Amino acid sequence: MKTHRPNFVIAMAILIIWSLLPILWFVRMAFMNHAEIASFPPHILPSSFNLSSFVNIFGYDYKLADGTISSASGQAGQIELGLQNSVIVSVVVTLITMVIVVPLAYVFSRLDFKFKNVLLNAVLLAVAIPPVSTLIPFYTMYVQLGLVGTLPGLIIIDLTTTVPFVTWMLIGYFRNLPPIERLARIDGFSRLHTLVFLILPLARSGVAVSAIIAFLFAWNEFTFALVLVNGTPATTLPAAISGFLGQDPNPSQLAACILITIIPPALVAFFLQRHLAEMNIADPVR
Amino acid sequence: MATIANKKSRQRRRELTDGQFALMIGLPVILLLVVIVAYPLVYSAWMAFHRIMFFGGYRAKFVGFKNFATVLSDPEFWWCTWVTIRFTLESVILTMLLGLGIGLLLNRPSRFGSLWRTLVFLPWCVSLYGAGLMFAYLARGQTGLPTAILADLGMQNVPDFMTTRSIVEVLAIGSSWTMAPLVGFFVLANLKTIPKRLYDLAAIDQLTPLETFWNVTLPPLRFTLFVFTSISIVLSMKLFDLIFVLSDGGPGDASSTLTYQLYKVSFKNLNLGYGAAMSFFLLFFIIGSTMALYLVWGRREKAL
Image (cartoon, rainbow over all chains, first blue to last red; front, side):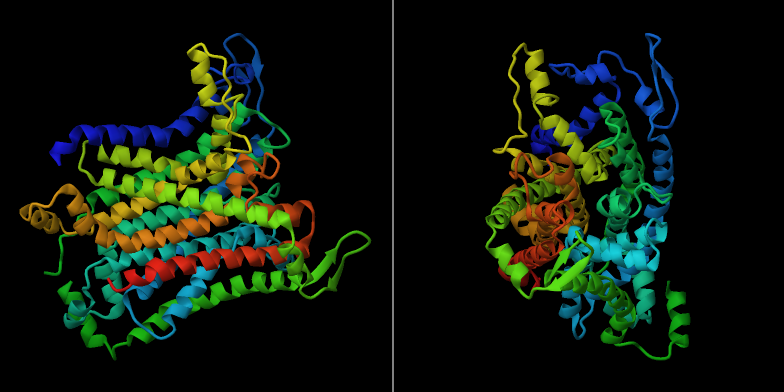
């Protein structure tokens, strides 16, 4: 491993730059003012760093260094509401998804039973349907059920995406765990106990990553949010931000908003990725 | 653990078979999914066989397979199919290569490991519409990074990548930028399940790094790689947010994948029957390509 040290450093540096460049480009824009963004040719660094956009999108005016006032964004109310709703929806969706998906993926990856492939393909079908084509049917159904513009309605829609998706991802992971079921049976563990006390701790890192994925899907869902909850009290952050695309274009505030949407999932990812670092399977079956 | 097991074994009445256990856990969820998925599918099927009119009052007229025939004879549909294939191939290959690279790089022990992991994972935290906006600003000549760099070097060129020729590549780079960390982290999670002693054995056998990679590292990854290739094919083919925000299908129809075209037909032209018929072709393509991948690749991995 030591022999590849310089190559490793270079590859790592390229990877980090690749990962951060688009985000940094928006950081730059968020700190610029209107005139700087509109100027041509564009500059790599803003001439002055000002926080006005971050203050504006939460509904406050900001006094710039030269005395002019950058006024609060008209979208502020929607954004605050959206932030709150997005947190609720994402947390609920993540919890429900994990409770459903972990046993499901385990069953599919480790046990043999009749109709397994048929059921697996049914799950795959649910993954394959493009959201655009289910938009109209879902909308009509939701109008009848009174779920348009409600958080439970959005949570159900998110679950129809996260459950099949995360199941498919976890199956591959569970297959690689050591086959300890038989040993557990000999020791007198029931199936449920085997899953909860033996498999789950072993599968910790896969489960952690799956939780991040479910959270991100719910946090970033755009298409359905736009149609079902945009402009209602149940609006989510993506729907609220879409206001900047049409009615109220302001690149700097738009960039600030997008950056704020990155923070919560990044925190979740940071805390859950430690599971990966601590993860060290010591080969329990010899 | 042992005491729990003993207590449990006394309480236990009888062992569930594999099938019963699977039924208990899987069936309720799958039934619910089938209901939730079946309803929109049946509704779309109904629309696909009707001509739906809004002007002069809402009417739906049964037209049989006419919508499907119209789709097949529409050159626009075939153009969008070609764009979809081009975009999907580029995006999937880029995503898988990047993902494998990320997994392998992050698996090396290094100082600040958790910091690097978090930074590399950041793109997946960016929503698809966010990524779409970022790449739109990066690639457009007016606001882009290449223009800014050239301007700082004193040149006047305005390299614009939002053109008919390169827009699909911009989209593919954008979508692989957001998807690759996901693949990378699952590769990483799988790499951690490889017992260390296999590497010791490989060292004793004096395998070259490439042979070690091929014989020790790759085999347990192959099933995960297959699963994620299928997943990224499906994701790329049904990708909407990114295209909607980044290029809006343009310039012209240069980046109208089938999913985008579906949106345009159903929501802009309000041609619901035609759109529904097209959605079945898209669904057929998506399922067909994953099935094909399963037949040429996934089937062999099952034996592992």
